[in-house]
Length: 301
Length: 204
Image 1: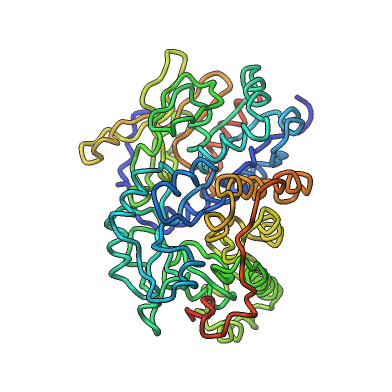
Image 2: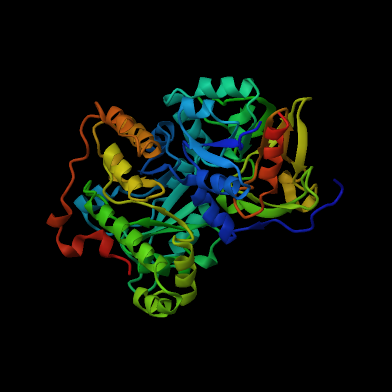
């Protein structure tokens, strides 16, 4: 062929940002705090790693302000693995996000697990070439994050607990609200948009499609292969595992088991097989026992 | 073949759904495949985009390497996109230390060749067999570093100075019953690249 296309390649488009999340589907993204942990995660079959300063269980135990990781640590993790590297920035902390973009991370998680930097505004994510994932406890919150430019959503759950109950609640809530929206008459969508506190155009698009325009993962409290399998059966398109791996007795083996369970989420024989002999799961905390002000899922709005 | 085409999409990880939807739009019977019996029943196979290291590891753990290699060697029409291209390549550059492939295509691919996510891009691309350019989405994509004599090059990044090291790189190939692209024709509504693959199945 002798015709030469004239279009100049474009980077940082919505399609390219949302596209990377599409490629991560059916996979497990693991929290890591060192290059060594990142390598263990990659070897276990993680589709990406999430770099952060401390895993949520330690943030809970130690308290204090939790921030973006040290750039040297992020460089080390990028150097150690060939899979995508994500990193967390504080809610509203656009300068941390600018730093992470400059470091070359592949995705930024604007995360409630870190201490929020702005209690009114989230980051204007359209200003970045790097894509963002954000947490949500319900559909309205997910749509507000997408309006701000998020290219991927994860249900929040309650990070650092090993208690999957809030992950279930949030995933069920988002999915139920999507089904309700899909069933509505078109003249009911104006009020639906008001109630969801999200722009009408996006609400209408989601109502017509019956699903979010971006990938929906689960997070917050997943600690076992069966937890991952349940969340996938509930409609998650992939899994974030935080403290559940590196706070367990045998991280490498547990990580690999959760990867297998996420692929074969609908095959109980496989889940049973990979659940054997994993050693101790992370100890865990019941979400009910955490005083309200210490619940991470309630950060972000 | 008298029955409707039955095309499997390898469903270990990745954008399986986009491929299934693209195939269903073209009116063929498309199913996710994860087990040897499912692979044995397919008239053609698509290996989707995703994370190549995860996919090859899962294939090994679930004893799919030999069933896949055997069927590919026996002439099963197979199409790999992005990670799927890496799995079909005989040789990889910049893989992980223990990264193997299924092989079949006499090519050397360079993993993550175009760079990190902020370098991911979309562009129009001329492709052999299509009258007008296809809109191609490249996500942390590999490129083909070199090809053996039996490999037909179907598409290249335009050879322009402003495209830097990406200029002129091979991004779509065919060899016998095997086809691979660095980009994701399953992202978007243009079914022409999948149609090229279905032609490959029908002529076997």
